[in-house]
Image (cartoon, rainbow, N blue to C red; front, side, top):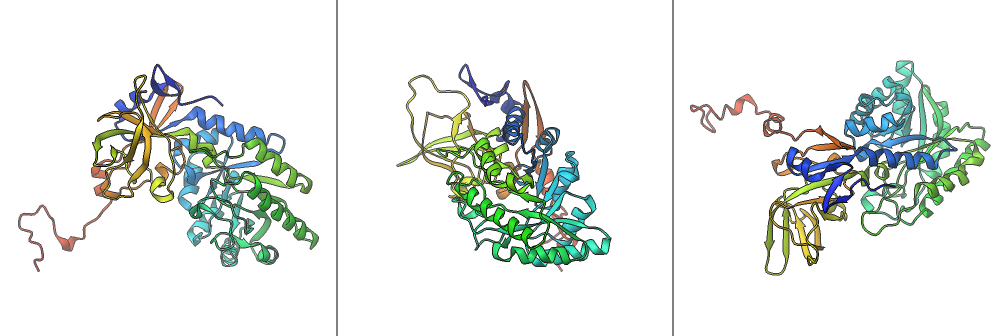
Length: 434
């Protein structure tokens, strides 16, 4: 696959655009995505499944920017959504409802209503109470909801505990031992059409293909069991979970993954859906930041950036590794030395890297955190009343801001002060006055 973030004459580029040029135009910090990388990664995944032609539902939670969704919509992708907001985003980006799957363990009545109104491909049901609630809503509307029962296969995805979803103790899905009864019940309830099974064991899955094989084989056995008792199973939704390289991981490629899926499910003659997220967008994005200070402590070198944990929370939340590279390469012979790369937020956890070997970095130098296209901007916040940063999309030699930097006025405008607290700008106002 081509390198969409190359160095040219010692300067970092995104496709045909110098990263420093974007920084000058929009300020720092900012997220920068490559449309070419998004497209190439989607095609690599789809081409691996050329024979099966599965429904590829991009996992919107990985990066929900409308422009990113529009890129995938134009490539023919569907969407895996987990909230009404994500459903609305997918539809607004032009993804057809018949290519949308709604997942999630805690769908509200309003969200189930929205899914029914949109006429989406299927709803992945994760509990008996959800199944009964959906039945009541669909029957009252005179609708029929196509559902897949999400199975919890009790498989260890060998990933960070906070993103593992397929173990028995996790909140997701219906225990595989109870899935047959849930599927039978779905066929008896009004307003419900059970069409298949779904599974998702976690994100950034480790252990190569082994966890996938274990989960998929259990799912295939359940398909056979259901058919043997006379129930119709037409579809399987295999979730996502394919990892990317952040540090030294060697995740399986899409071709090997597709071969595994083919080996297990082709004999069962099923329609297949997949929910890739991180694998499509993660390597397609950077977080670009500027050095505020280079601080020499008593025992450590600190590089303090204008980006912070509120902009990219993965290192604080998951102890995640992101490579940190200079936007302009250092002079030949520059000596690397350990540095802690931190942000300005008043939290010790506002740390991007500890003891990272880096070249000399001075005030106003630009750096880029790689692999930031997934679970970056989408998880950002205004903690410490910091502004949400821009997102920028590059396509060849052009770029556009696809989410502007939030203004202070807009941020303050989200709050409302009750009348009884008075106008702080009124000179007659006195705090605590009756």
